[in-house]
Length: 376
Image (cartoon, rainbow, N blue to C red; front, side):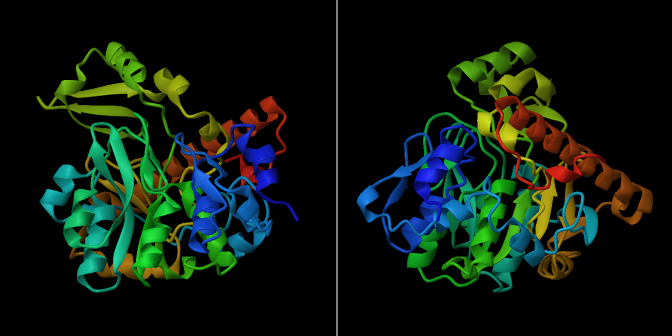
């Protein structure tokens, strides 16, 4: 039976830990207290004597192949980018959500709709706590859900926000307050690695993952270190001042919206050196294990590409359409839908091949984890 000691040797020390927090969240939820997150967001022993060496923390890691086949079966995963039941280009009908959102505000609009209809009690999201910093957060009111909209450069680690970093969304560390408050219907918004960790928990029926009613995944090209020096580098590349920035977004490129209304574009290749090391080993771009996946790739500015994957996802998205969410004319055009899906497949293809090349370069054994389907 492999344990957290093996996770240290195989994942943490080689630098391929995604800081999803699943191992720590599980250990905390069952009140073992053996693990914690360090100030940099990496899991570590809090009290090694409390570890019962059961091995579940090891199996839950997205970088470990254990449970992959069972988890794929549970979510009806198919090649090359997971199940695709439907695809849409959409945005929030509420203009206040759109004005603060990254793309079309569909995730926020859907969460608000679910909350108003009494279909969820809470949502695991992130909120801004300081300039360029966000923290994972269990939103329990409509106002809290709305306040979490938007895209900022920072990084959230479980229940902590440490340093000047960037990350897109939430972490599984919020299982603890979710558990303590007794919520049974929670929507979880996360990046691909986080969604996969949650699905592994559900495969094992580990408490409190049964309380996560919906998994909403975000397209993710990677997380970027974003301290003062990194901000200075980006400002020099694009010739702007951060005090003049209104909001930022990532699609094919880094898109910077200034207060003046000017839009500046920075190629992702120009900031590749800022990407977190572990992200180069992640093979999932489009959150292939989610109920619904969301992102800006394949959609016009101000709109969101939506991939509906599961029956549960199809139900809630259908119910929200024409109420909280409106579809773009591109959705009605079969060619437009195909083009959007092909764009997502292309970026997924790129990320899988980068992961494969990165593993070969370091001599790390490549888990199946979708990599066998790299070719388009």
